[in-house]
Image (spheres, rainbow, N blue to C red):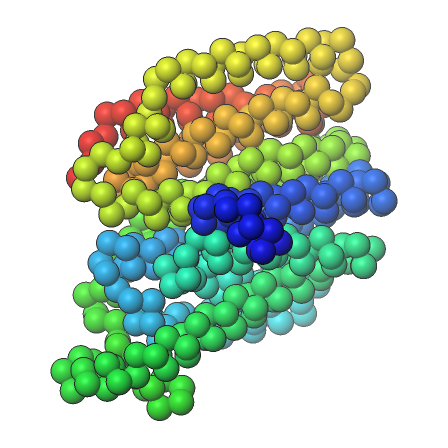
Length: 419
């Protein structure tokens, strides 16, 4: 696949996006396979478990993957200089999470125990992604990002049940593989720059690394800046990842049949193909514009009022078609899936504008947006569940929420000047 992309002369950024799109497609194929082979009830169980695995990982990460990007891009810190800190964080995560997982399992909460056991691996994968983006570029970032989706699809095709265990195994494989890539890259770079590092070791603080080589230590002031930047982005990352889990939990507690939960989970997977893709592209967009002190061409593209008007017209037309389909065929899945697809497209536009705000350090605004999205979508879903099926309720809630988020983000980004 890599050779095919290179022969087609696709740019590095587009190759990265292609890999991430393949990862999103693999996630969707996993959902469709479970629904087709095991039924919508099994899909509901799988979707609810996966949503909580993803949400808990984002909450436990504390925004640190973005903090690494901030130090590497804004502060000029070399990737190798962050390795001792990364090792320390992962040791702390394992020390806290694995004993807690054992205690939770002893209390009979198996799924919660598996979620806790997966957190050090999930954190390793998220930190390694950010590190590899700076060290090896966009294409490797795309491959590493898509890897868990491919592993999960292969696991689901082989094993027919025990979904929490499959999710734990997938996370462990992704975290271990990405960390191995980081270790290999660091050793290779340390070998090539060994002479330079030894010449500076008398004046620069350092840590002893494997094989007798040295890497610079992370100064205390930069550690403080790392945590400050990470916690500023943590709220929006945690709330954004909690959105699917929250919506599925609302459906699960609403008293509807297990099949309704499966339909809602399947629809959310369609939505997340777009939302996750936007999340994948966001670091690449940040990679391109974070260093600009003036308005970049990407800002102008994202803020084009003409493009927004065209999208509103096309989106409004598609919305009328989907609503007509729901009215004519209330029991069919395709109109609600189409509505969810439209919500996903709007989510991509909203995330692109949000990334411009992120690159301009508008952290408070983004945290408020994430909290509003979670609250509004949950409330609208809870209210509409009294009148329509779960899939339609969630689709309508997400379309309304993402539309308002897009409008507000575009307005704020247009008012925000580069600093």
